[in-house]
Amino acid sequence: MIQAVDLSLEDLLKELTGSDTNESEYARLREALQFALDSHREERRPSGETYFEHGHNVAAALSELGVDDVDTVIAALLHDCLLPHTGVTEAVLHKKVGRNVVALIKGAKTLDDYAKKTGASNTSVELDANTPEGRATLEAIRKALLAIIEGDIRIIVIRMVDCLQDLRRASDMPRALQQKVAHEALHIYAPLANRLGIWHLKWQLEDDAFRY
Image 1: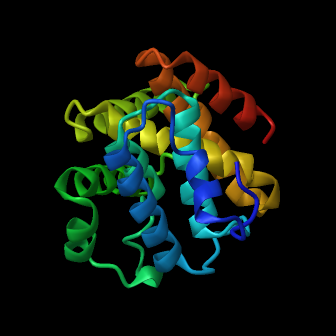
Image 2: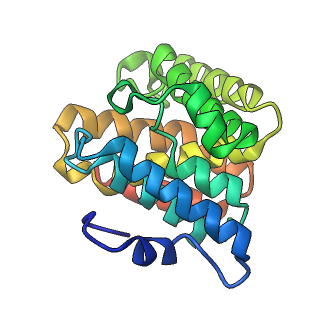
């Protein structure tokens, strides 16, 4: 995982490619990486991490998990590229990376928006997993998230790893935000990872969430 953006493009690419990456895929990853650099510049997230670093680290974590689908890795790298600070439109992104990648990016954003709208990251008593009402609400949210992805598991895996990267930088966040990220990881995404059989990701989400 990178800690700064002053590495060469080729060094950054090493974390996103595997032994089976062909020349065409390498070129696509390189172009997407440059686009992410140009789009995010030095804008920072609440943790102090730059948006570029965050996107790169999410993509690199997917590679570590053995995800070798280039569309998925590029979508993870660029998942914040439609935020206002970038000035990037959906039409521009579509031209740069294609319809399939844009669909994954929009799907991941829809998951995040739904989680915020329903209070999935809320630590209030209504979503307390120790109460029947809280368990029922959380289960309804999980089922809705699975419905949103319409069978494309790649969308939710991107969002899970996005959440995991937030947890890895949570020590630099305000306490209230730490609690929200940890609650979402522990009660939404870790159970979904378990349901989907992604054990390694489930354990990482739980271990990092318990710290907060």
